Image 1 (cartoon, helix red, strand yellow):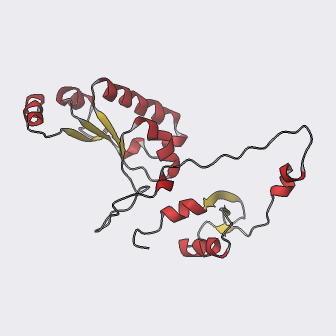
Image 2 (image 1 turned 45 degrees about the vertical axis):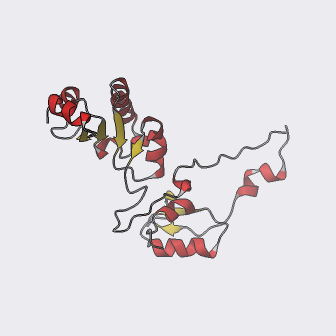
Image 3 (image 1 turned 60 degrees about the vertical axis):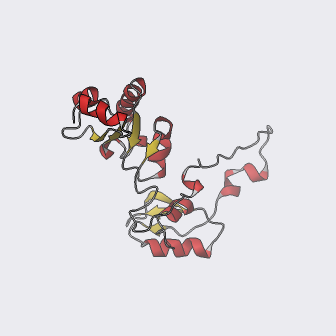
Length: 193
């Protein structure tokens, strides 16, 4: 499709889009010539964007270009909460497993917890330590889960302790390699459960 065809189709209510911008032939030249209504960024740019400053700068540049020409950006391949929260301000639309896996009968509405930030807790300063603000008062002895434990095992641990929000994850040498959050585990349950 060329720019002239796109304008003709637009008069009949059709929208133009570029898929996987930044991969293969979906480049800046095509974007500038076609002037589509939507561009979907290649998932490469979304993967671990919360940990990669250069990706964030690159994506922000593409968002700036899109806004200047009236084009909407779609973030593709968002798989974890951190990727969504790092990118949500620049996109009208997002896709990815974070929101749900492909399903023959997809949900019509998404769980609002997908879009909520974790609540930050604040400690009130009084000038002297209070018993409930000492680190020792926050410590809880927990048996960690192993990096190779099944989701069912981890889910069972959360089911048995309803007030438990996190579990430490350790490797074979008992070194902490991560944290499993209860709400992240909920997101991985299939739609039909």
